[in-house]
Length: 409
Picture 1 (cartoon, helix red, strand yellow):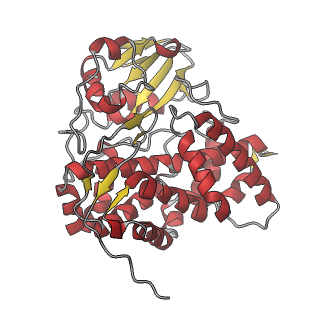
Picture 2 (cartoon, helix red, strand yellow):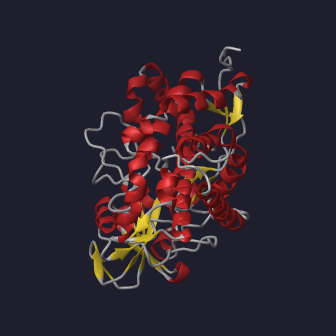
Picture 3 (cartoon, one colour):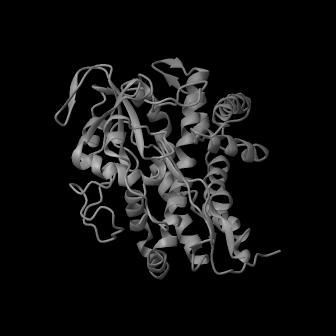
């Protein structure tokens, strides 16, 4: 059982051995059930879709390829198509050494100490969102909590976006992350245009000492950073932090609906929530795959790979590999080792992982404290998207109605 609804069986062997398609709506409801036999019987499968690519599913292979940037490059195009974008996402779509230069511009603003400054404001934001629906005893969790929470937190606290822009740009960022959405292409271009305008406005304003200032006033290899580079860096920061955090919360609350003992345990022992975040990241990874291109001949396991071959690494499959994790499909807070790959690994490991952990921890602490007896609404039919990220498209839930907070007038 995956969350609250019974999982369908895996797709046919012929499909995943030869015609694997990350964009297929057939894959979304049975992602994990399809990845499991691939790990066991064909851990490096070749698909004839999109001019051909390899699908890598075992933990050991995913780990090795992700760290070998000299052979498997991030800078030579994606394996499968996406909506057109105006500029590349930086630093994720380039390789070292230039990748390291870009990443060093932003990492100081996402250290544990840096993001700790957002704790109180984040907690207030979470409770303000919960106040909007707690008395009703029901909500559409994705639209009323999971998606607005990281968007409002990020645009307000991290980049100080104008309040009047936040709703519009958060909408574009969310739509751009859904490859099959008919608005995705328009929203990609709209998001890039907004970032370019935002950068121009910030250049005319006094410095605030935040990550935006660091990006737009940076030098790269002794020269001023270009406009496209600035846009690409801020675009990646936005997209990397919003849909993945929203997806994680949606996946986890879907699981809670079918496994009420998990929220009950965490409600009774909130000190376990940081460990629960790590285990939930492993078992319900929001960031499920990434693409690479071989730039020289190599091997993945026993499979020869030729220069020019495209490769998709499945973090979500690696995180459920029983060669690395015992009983990998079980939620288990007693794991001695949990070296999950939910934030990636190697040079391109997520720079914003500390911010994501803060948001996810506080999101769970406050929502589980205030929402009890969480269930799917009667008749709810949950659908997922599963491309590079995985998320419920909608999650209508019920819970015991509770009071809004009493605030001083």
